[in-house]
Image 1 (tube, rainbow, N blue to C red):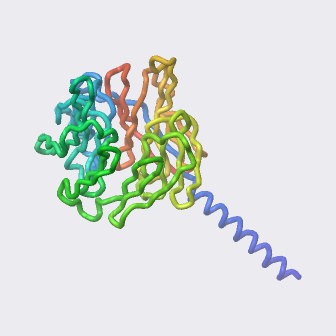
Image 2: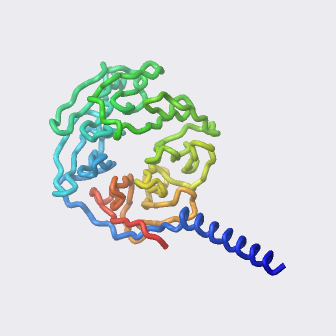
Image 3: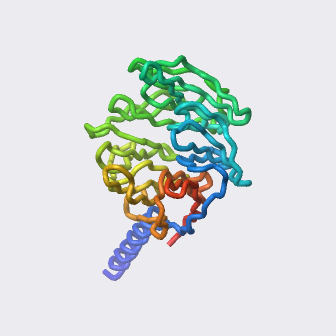
Length: 319
């Protein structure tokens, strides 16, 4: 009888220790956050920053989206990379960080036409990949070395638009097409149908390709487990970006009066929604468009009221 009780006690202790281990492994991480620090450059009204895959550069645009600049993160100096109408809206880095993919706009007879363009970062040269067409509504994306975009409501792939990145750099790519999330890889495409009638916006893929974050038009910000398709509602938020370890999401949370933004903060939440951090609670200007550095140590964002880019130091800690 005593032996039986002892065995049961050992079993219960083992179960409790296992539960504590799983809990700690999953949720024991938190963030240590610094104060926003302005990046002092001569470019006025820098906006929409995006880290390069190496973390050595930040690309950003300016109001009107007709320019793309490159900021050297070591020297904190910026230079003009490309200047074409609309090129600064929704641009994307190539997997190796050597190119930027964008959409150029031309207005003809009061109608907008678009062309897909490729910018060589080192050479600062721009190559037009397509003719100007009135039916290229979506932003182009990289799928490995290929470029994918819409033309006349059909999806077109330009194969080997850039030199093929090494296998280590070819990651899966997520894109929202025709009310479906499509996960592209070298092995093909996986189709995921989210349970929303409204369109999805600003979809991003976690570094391990296990989760997606996206906005629902007119609704909230969500995280989806791509294997189980389980959804986590993170509340109101826009323009998400995953942390490099995939455990957190940074995004902007803004209020407006119907004409302009009245408040905007940079928020971080764990992907299960259990932990929340306001990174700019003591920062009175508008804070928008965050992007997490590849090494996980900094978050860059812009402030339209200040016309500057800001950096926040972040550190993952174990509680």
